[in-house]
Amino acid sequence: MITGDLRRLWFATLFLYVASGFVFPIFPVYMSFRGLGPFEIGLVASVATLLSIFPVAVIGHVSDVVNRERLEGFLGYILFVLVLLYVFVGSFIQFLLLHPVYITLVYAYMTLSGAIAMDYIVSSRGMGFGRFRTSGAVGWVFGTFLGGWVVDNFGFFYVFIFSSMFFVVSASLFIIGGLKKKEVREARDTVYHLEAFRKVLSNKTVSTLYASIFIAWLTTPAYYTFLPLYMTKELGTSRFLSSVAFTITPFAEVPAMIFFGSLSDRIGRKKVIALCLAAYPVRYLLTVTGGLLHEPLLVIVVQLLHGLTFGGLYVVSVAYLSESVGTEFKGLALSLYTIFSNIGSFIGNYVLGYMVDVYGFTLMYYAAALFSSFSVPILVILSRRR
Image 1 (tube, rainbow, N blue to C red):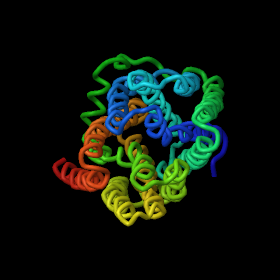
Image 2 (image 1 turned 90 degrees about the horizontal axis):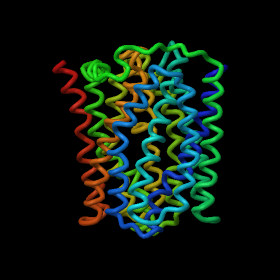
Image 3 (image 1 turned 90 degrees about the vertical axis):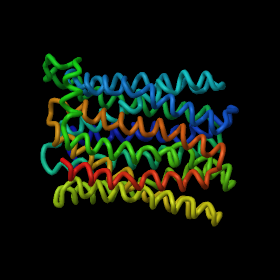
Image 4 (image 1 turned 30 degrees about the vertical axis):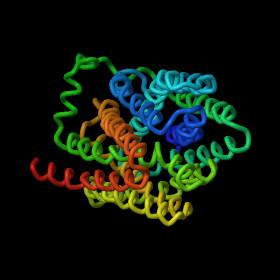
């Protein structure tokens, strides 16, 4: 049962994911609507990911020192403005300038929401964070569903308006907690020093996880960036139906977060992480099978494996990292988790975008299945060596 401040944080995170869910699956379709080709869309996503790497790390590092909840609220208010700016952009260069700023702040915003929750959860962290993180899954359901419905019935303008409104509500809920608390963190000599990064990255448990996550995230653009295009262009589905592929994933995420979080409390974090990583190639192979059979509904149902490849994996990884680095570097460790994910996604957006342009969607999905299959062996091999 979630009570007290965790209840407030639950709703703050809920509205965060409603806001991001409104626009996230719409971005590739919106860019295509504005005249960008698949390679340009992949390049925008890649550049956005690359440029977000250092700022996300800095924001996470700063959050270990300042009032984390006030910082979170400040980021939310900036996102309110940034989302509205998408209404006015229409060229490749304009997207190349705006999208990296948005991606940087939304990744930092999502990352810090987890760090804030872990500040409050002190026991049974796998199960506790799993219950808390259901807020993101529920928010994603409403955001993606309503975003697809709104764009089909009213157009892109209203999607960005609604998204910005939910960012304001989320930011305000985070700010409330920050205003109630005094500054409990004191500045340390290592605050803006590379020594903090060295301490986290030299942690063998942490670096092994980062390596595995990097491999897995090389392939995630096959879902996040190109699935809407695969469904609308290759299978001929509507924009609304392509959004449903994102809407249904939280129905698997909610039980997966609770179940796998609790399971990791009993059998160990690393075993559950390996199980979740193994679901990546299965998901891509089943997705392309649904496409070859020209069954859009099968493609949509397969996305329920997101419960493992994101829901279970993220919850257990956050608990794993929080326990591995302690309170002092929690924000930095979780930010670096996002960064290694983003580096993989950056390379993947470029490579998979090129493959779609030259070879088509089918071969791209087979390649994604092959690449992602290496994540579990890497986790096992590096663990044994250490």
